[in-house]
Image (cartoon, rainbow, N blue to C red; front, top):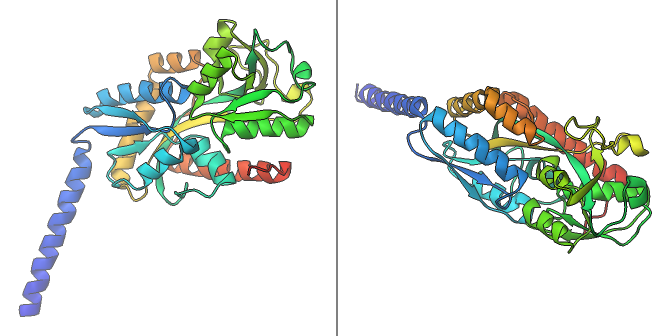
Length: 320
């Protein structure tokens, strides 16, 4: 009888704890949510994060506070979120670098698959080869690849901006000098100032400067020409078949975040992306909205890591 009594008490306590846990998940969020952005303020990733966070805050009824943690090609921010409590209150803007190129080239302080619960995709935008319009005479990609020794900005060793340029160098047989930065914004700032001559940033980052004539676009690293810049050819059509590299951005939570919380966040994110004003704002900024379920986004991340790993091996890229 005594054992039965103890079992009954333990069962009741367990049921109460489960009920409280389920209730807490159902009420999520009950306090502000932190969204960690792994780049410096002002970059395309930062713009997307703040646009989405602002609208999701209204739907969730609690603020989503953006915090920038740039450095180490996104590893600092990714490790921070991976080690945060798995309760949905600390999120990462995971993107092609943190969950695509980094795992393909580096030993990381986090596991891009095991340490995260993917929430959903935000948007994607192609990389675009740009040069300083007043400093670099090249008007076409063909003219660009005849010049050795130019400097180019990247958002860090192993980043998409780095690997995309490395791939072009390998394909074209040229050698450029990498200057790594802690994010796209400082790299573009030095490109505009003439401290470096070229870059392969996302179109969402480069577009305003292409439009004002300070940067010249030479080639799009995508499978098709982009509607906002129909006169800029793709790198593939200029003689480098299958050259395709896009920047993508999404939301990830720490691993073991309760599924109801992940789904609540995903529902809010996809509702924001379905908003006509938000979609128009992102489209005008050169971002294609890409809503996904958590499982679809998880599959996409795995495919991206596999793609960049194959590219690094096929191109025999040496990143040390």
